[in-house]
Image (cartoon, rainbow, N blue to C red; front, side, top):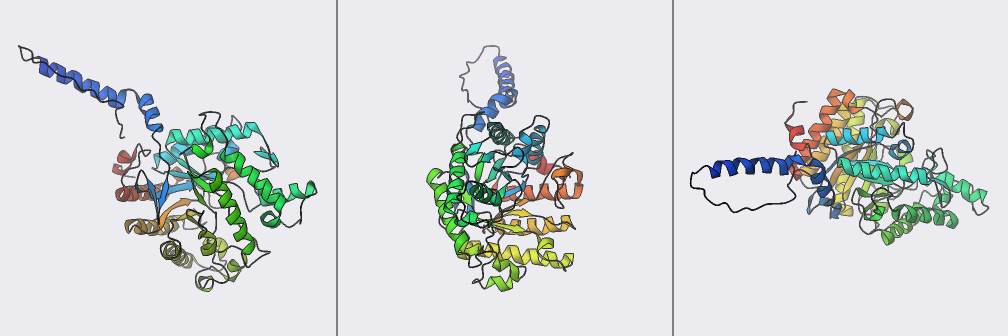
Length: 437
């Protein structure tokens, strides 16, 4: 643990005739130093909190306090949802503490729940303050644990409302142009719904610390939408127009935080890599285009997902791992040569041979970081705590219940730390990396 004293005291010493003054004062000074360094942990912690810096971008690198910042993190999409009720709220602290204990620095989670149970947005522009306070709690708890948050603003899927809920709202109010879920991207009324939502989230004043979300460095950045697809327009023009408009709107309100789209990473129909790197032909027909979407000036970094056993149905594990290597190296190359932006692998999961899968991903990120290339980090999908079977999927794990996986995660944390140096919020890093796991 590295702690810094909040004040430096300088005292002049006057010699005493019997010569005993120096050892006495020396001993007293030692005690004072120990107290100043370790005695008042709460006071020191608060002062360090206020020095929390925003993560920035410099070309293909994330930076923190002017130094390269490489990310080892995870997904726990459920934090706000579980922060609402008192009996589930302790899970928020439990997973954030566990992440900090592994030296992780970033958690991706949902900042939305539209029209569902414990909805944040119960109808367009109408919010449940009880749920908003749960999100306030998540942000404050993350800051206390030294974890930053990547907050996603809406889902392409139907889980927790998603774009289909916005379409239903427009249809119910008699202003919807189409019942197609993809009208989320082109219907002017729905665009206005979403802009109103963005503004409400970004300008929210946290009831626990009084800081507007757009001014809080605990938030690493914003993600426009989880896994956007607009298959009714395979050309990609509709989604491209939506990303341009919404990203510019975010930046109009918040110029301090980083912004990403939330892409899976599929190459569009006009990109040569659609045939050589995409998992299969269907991936170029979804209306998304990794290079084109990520090049938008108001997008700060590119996001990529990795789910080989969902994208292929007839491959063995060895082939999955070969694809993962090719997929990651291709996107890192894009970050370097096409985008001049960091590339973060914001979701990755595999149902079988998980440790080999994690090791493949971590090794590629480490090698990229070592060369100061665009591979800026990765976020495993997903981490849960005990008693959450209902919220699990085939990829969720409790890391500390899997010793080999737990060791891999910590080793990756320590390898990245040797490149970039310790981050202030990684309070236990020295002890963590000296331990035998």
